[in-house]
Length: 289
Picture 1: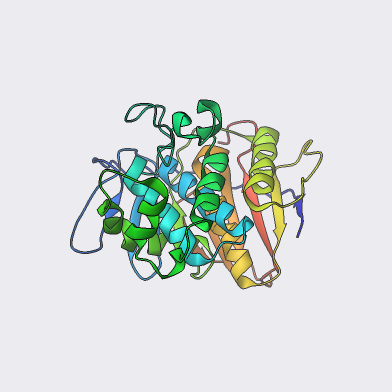
Picture 2: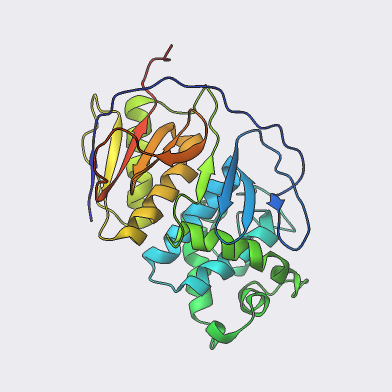
């Protein structure tokens, strides 16, 4: 698979803001509801509905991608997401109990790595999967048992309550659902233009192991080759998950297009046939009127 740059025709942007309050994420499973703290939110729908804020969504997408890059089964991604849900609320924390840090609250004093390494989301996820793989019979364990075998928490049964949410996220992020991740993006994206393309390319390379796109001068988007529909939706959902923090304006795949204009997926209406690639456009360097 390869990543390469592509230029798109720009469209106008409309502000999409949801004022939500709460702690970690919306739970619409089991009759419980938790609301995210940030105004930039992401809705995940895949045999269930989960709402996360932009940071949580980006972290979840990276955790899932690292699992696939390490050739871990779907069950491992569910366990990893449930663990990060419980330990940090899917946030890359700079603090915790004693010297615990990061998404999985790993501790330098227990050999997980340096504080700087643990605060690297990809490093933390890689270390978690490596530890899980060493647990004999983890594939047959309950989510909470597998997580506890790695974490050795003082609350060994706590991970199970996030199993349903983690399963929804896993279905979406592993490409088992279509147009399943939709995020809102404000008028002032964190990144624009070449910087956004470069960071997206870097993220695709690190999270998925895709080759570097090389020069990005004067280009406003990326394309990702997909060998099949599942791969295509993995990349498409990853791009939307990282849209708020990487300046993604539009993502197109499988005859559908997500737009920052309204934060939703819709059918492509320009008459062009669906392409076997994922196409992503970023916001231009200059603010568009």
